[in-house]
Length: 328
Image (cartoon, rainbow, N blue to C red):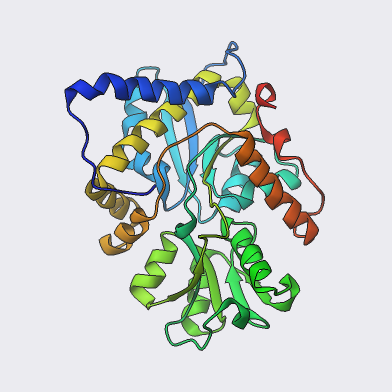
């Protein structure tokens, strides 16, 4: 969600914006199954993390207002990272959520029944490898033999793989320390790891609060897409409700792009993080939900193949198998 200071247009542009949102939703819907006789539901369960458009959607309350007309409630569940969110999706505790590039690959390799519904544009500067401000490490080459904290199977896992590849360091030449964000930050602060691979807003918090120094971010290494996923049963059983979710995400994306100050206010309230932290993170976001394209599927497949080659996932997968049947 790259934020700028562009202001929302006045009334003459509104029909164009509505047409634009309609085209986005139609394009996304084209990848979903055709309308079927959906079973009535009383609630949609959404998994989110401390960043991004779903956090804004929750904060604005616009989805609840739209679904109230159908007597459908919304239940929000926060997750610390993508892998556990998709575990919740797989076991049926949520219907829909957003994660980075790597979690769906690990989940699919583990047999999860999930469907890619859409994605946000690349946001490579929203994740980075950081070191303490007084660390002697100055380049990627310095990571050889060092302890590097990361959340296994999260979006930053591929950043680490690509960064090491660029530096000519085999993956097994470092000591990965697999920790969720809160535990990784604690390890980073007490000096029990040499580096930390992390995403926003945790990245922004480390920079602002700890003075962490960025060794390298994702630019030139990874795309860092955010993906919207649903359980296959939800996507295929509730195509109309899935379309509504995407339409409301598209609207809040458009609003967020034009209202950076309000974005910071909502994110600060929703995450409990200081405003300077969320402002830094929000400047690096990328707004604009899009349907899955052949190019993005190919990018995901390259990540899956890399993880299999490193034996990080137990078997090869075909990313296209996690698309809705009509989009394969």
